Each structure stands twice: as C-alpha cells, then as structure tokens.
Length: 115
Length: 115
Picture 1 (tube, rainbow over the protein chains, first blue to last red):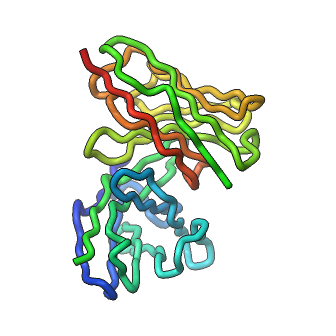
Picture 2 (picture 1 turned 180 degrees about the vertical axis):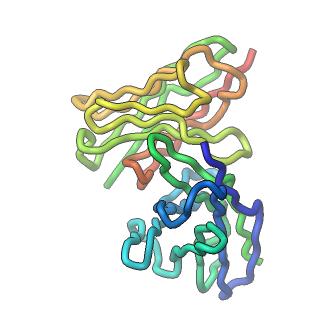
Picture 3 (picture 1 turned 120 degrees about the vertical axis):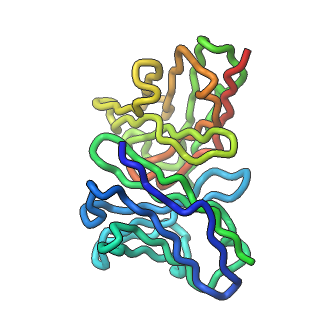
C-alpha cells in the first residue's frame, strides 16, 4: 500500500494560519484522488473534517467550521489542509487519507501545536 | 444523531481470539459500508477492514488478512470483527467508522494482546 507522508509536527500562533501537508508517493498522482482530513484530540476518536478533490468537488464534515479548507499542490504531489484563524482548540493531531482501490490508507499524522 | 458504540475489547494471550462488536444507531445501518480502524498506543491510525452495506464485499489490510473477519447483522444494526491468532502487535484501540469516508467514529475499544 502507498505511504502518505505528513510532517510529524507543526506549530503556529493563535489567529495565524496553519498549512498541513500530505505528500503522496511519486507513482500516485494527487490529481486523481480525493484527499480526506481528520482531526484527533487526546483521548478522543478522530473527527472527519473534509475532503478535497478540486475546487468544484469538495465537501465539509458536519459542523466543521469554514476556516478548515482543503487544496492540492500538483507540482509537489501534495494534499493540503489549511486552517485559518487558528484557535487554541485546534491543537490536535491531523491525519490525511486516500482510497486507492480496495484499501484505505492514512498518513502518519501531524501534531499541530497552537503556541 | 449517529451513534457507534464498540464493545468486546479486553486482554487476551498471544494466539487467542476476540470478537468486537459495534452497535449502530441514528442512521439506516443497512445502507452504509462500515470500517474497522485501529490505533496502537501512541501511534497513528491504521485501516483494518471494510464491509459493504449488504456484506457482499469485504476488504482487509495485509496485516490482518487471513486472521481477522469482518461481518455485519443488518437486522441487529451491528458490525463485528472476529480476531483470531492475535499477536502483540495487534494491541490497539479499535474503532468502527461509518461509510467509505469515515464520517462518524465510535469511541473505540481497547484490545491488549499480552501473556
């Protein structure tokens, strides 16, 4: 199964934006996949945030604020989760996921610290 | 509202068996595919298995293929995971999750494989 690469950690200050990345292996084109994002706080199950395929094909999870958004960087073969107007409650682990055929693959996760 | 409640976790010796259950409510269970996902202590998310809404197709991660069996009883709104030949590396919190995009998750049940 493919390996999705996420930086282990990231940090930003309240009110700023955080850009979390999810890099696909070179033999898989990010342009052909929905990229899904999940948030997990300590002691809680993951929460579905959103998926992004393109600007015309994307979806937000139930109750997820619009300051969470997705995008792609085709040149870097990367999916991106952008969190704007950071709040202390956004401190959590974030996981990306793709669905290549009959298997589902999660990235290793990024721990976001809100300084 | 959607509710997923896992049960059946516990401590089991290597080579032993365990059956997990996931009771679903708040949605039409028989209309949706369902997953099992696990998370080892301090680690990331690992997809385990998926079953289609009608049980017609099942898919497994390579790490559990041949040892774990996913099933469902739509008359009881319940998802199952039969785990055989358990190993220490199967120690994890096991979550059930709804649909191909994991849009709702249960609270998880802890499985510890230890002698």
